[in-house]
Length: 240
Ligand code: CA
Image (spheres, rainbow, N blue to C red):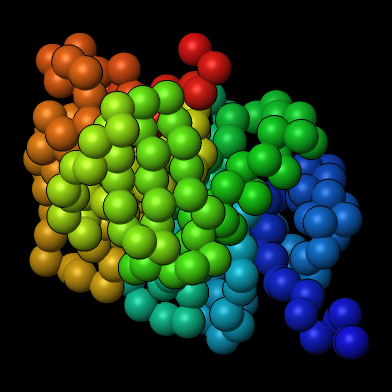
């Protein structure tokens, strides 16, 4: 078997050479081939002609900033669906990244540890790899009082079957498969309504409200799907 053939390619956009090299080094260990870019303009040039399996994008860049790069990539071109992990210097910036619908899938605040970086990378890759509709390779999930069987598209709450729409199922599955990980409305939108462009991020709030009524013990005080103000939603940590 030719291992090189299924190597994935990552674009790492960061003007600080030390951080760029560090990220590349660890992505290589993870099996990625890395392409580095030191500015937004360079990133857009590279992303314009090469499809990447992952894009790590710093927010503060000389010239075209990370948010604009992210939006431009999402608008059209070969990387419009590529997983994008944003790097930011501060948490307030991270809120902006996800709150402004830049199209980023997730963010990481600097300074970050290697384990955190790799956990985020794996999470965004997994999210993109998970197909929207019933796929036998998707694993069943047991999360507190909720059991999800994706192969049969079945959900049980306290052992009782509950009817979920396709969107509700997709949204719940993507949240419960990565407890504690914050997902932006935009990222959830693309998971619950894959390929549709006319729904807005507000639809995510409406969907979450409906979903909570079906799966929470008390929908007014949710303990499974938690709101992260200004950012999005997450499933509670499985252990708490
Ligand atoms: Ca920078």
